[in-house]
Amino acid sequence: MNDVYELLPQDKGRKGGLARVAYMRQLLKEENLNTYTILAGDLLSPSALTTMNSLGLDFITFGNHEFDLSEKDLLSRMNESTFTWISTNIFRQDNNQIFGSSISHKIITIDTIRILFIGLTLNGTGNYVRIINQSSLVNYVQTFLKLFSNGTYDVLVAITHLDMIIDIELALNIPQIDLIIGGHEHENYYYLRGTKYIPIYKADSNAFSVYIHRCAYNLDTKRLRIEGFQALGYEPKAILSCLPIGIELDGRFQSVLSYTTLLTASICESMLQLTVANKTTIAIINGGTVRIDDILRETITQYDILRTLPFENMIVVLSVPGQLLAQVLTTGISLKGKGMFIACTRVETLDDGKTWLFNGTDILKSGFYYNVVTTTYVRDYTQLNNSNVTILYNTNVTQTRSLMDYLKFKYPPC
Image 1 (cartoon, one colour):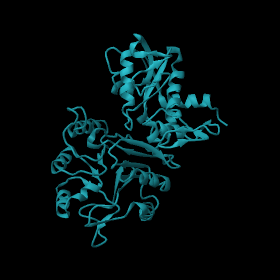
Image 2: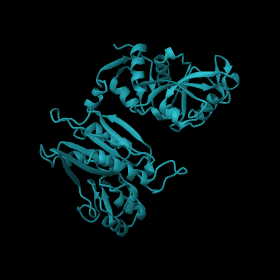
Image 3: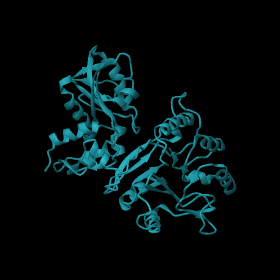
Image 4: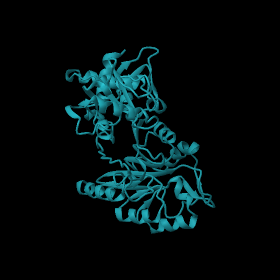
């Protein structure tokens, strides 16, 4: 988790709360004793510190807001903590010593597997510390890792509180990294970057969400991940599709959170194609399901789609009354710039969402029920979570797989 400023649940008790995190950690510990709890920066209040001690936090790296405190207060907080502060790029301003009780790295051993943790924080705050700035961080980490001889560690985990673009640069330029657990953005992200498809995770602030990483290390191949994709039936390097010149799948956040792009329309159409036997007529998704923040052009691999749609959102077919469906669509397009902005196909509005037409008919006034295909996430977190909505079919197929199959059909491989 990361960026924890509030201890109690928010949104009338429906989101967050460290008590929930503590209970979840207890269950995970019962499942696997080798469970570690990590916070990727920004833990401010004294009460939060006490709670984290009780919760059983294992490792933390500094966030930029830690240095909003005076040096005396921050050192006092660190001394009160029972968890380990890992900081690789922060030093005292007056010398080259690490700050307070922090350590530059931590190696733990699980069975015979040695896991190296490093901690990295963005610069810009704290006049009593010297922070290696983000523009120099890739070179600095590369040099730092040379301190460890071959065979010192098997897995490298970077706990970071950086801008996402710097996390991506680390993944692109330091292939020794196996996992990046990040913070700072306050919104959940899951990216895969670099030739080794290094995962970058960031959770929502205030424990609205946490990421649970179940890691398996293959002693034969010496790899932590990728085999997991293959176990799910994916071959990341396999070519899926070749887009014709002029055809672009726009997955930039500014686009997919503002209007239906060819990419989000293709996702919707793929879901309709999957459920044609269920006589689905309308498809809707939330723009925030797209995580690539880039434009796909020309040759498309499975890896491109895995980083476009990294979440295992299952596709479901619903029977929805027209009046309710119109409400869902109107609410959805009003959320421009937010993850729950709705993209759709086969239904249109000519007046900014006041009226929705299907084959020229106003669905609000039609009195009809419509067979709608969407994801379980959209069903659960919109007005579709309603007793008047009937689940017609659970496909047990992810929208990731659906889009792969559709692109292979729509734009065949070269």
